[in-house]
Figure 1: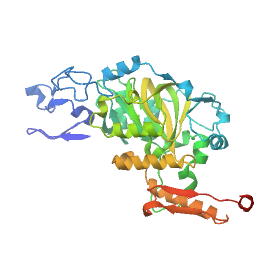
Figure 2: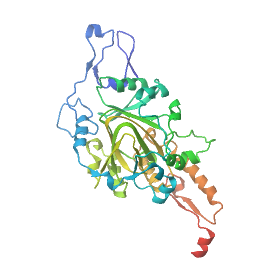
Figure 3: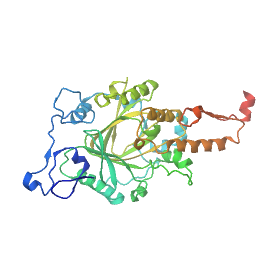
Figure 4: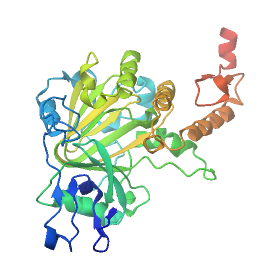
Length: 392
């Protein structure tokens, strides 16, 4: 919450996401004489700075009402080419290890997945009850593609109110340390394969990263532009009610190079990344469906109707090279710490320590670090048994 001061009277509170729209501010005592605060005039609906004078002269920017309307009219490749449809009981660590977890997985039959969630009647007011209305959260002003802070109670009031002057999207409410945590159990594969759950020591000098339980609440037309989840983590999403639309792009070397160049370009918001690659796949995730996205997949998300979803991120032993490649990209792009996996290097060292202990009983191994630091490319050649050595 921002505090604004008037020269005539004491300070008053104004919500941060409203502050950017105010042109001339009048406090409650002053507006008796001077009238209500004057808001900035909206000159266009296709730019983040909607007060720009040259309406229509500049390209459409991501997240704006014009962009969302154009996005919904676009044609995309069918996700059936890349998304695997499976039953929950089939999605096991053993299966992912055998298949390599290279493609997104959509699950509609939850039995056997190990996912526990509240019933579909669970609403945004219930979230406020379990998490607490005073919790300060990061919310995205979608039309501006900018972060703003507000109390959860303020967001719930906005979500349930009859008037929504702007589109706000909440995607970063991690609730592992709240009463709501007991209502959610993550899928078995995310729990059993997670580096943090398996290798993070209880006596660690660093606080344990909490990235496994997120509650996402978005109103219709919320949009998150193309990104790779932090640290190259894999991610699971479950739509409790409403609907999400994912735009998926394979993490090929060519696509990753294009993505890095696009991410660092000054006109990133004016270029739809899906147009820069050979194929972008559209995947509609309706109520009751769980989507698992593997390491490195580039994706954007549109909330096509008011929606509540749950999700979480996890690092794992599959595709370690891709995880490290994504982390290196974040470093080159100078990604702020707020948007990076907490203590990524620490968890890599803990995994390396566990691997070292595992390999002590093997015949030989080679484990080296290039440049002397783990965040540089790390190569590891794991064991050969005595029989394999004799046969080689």
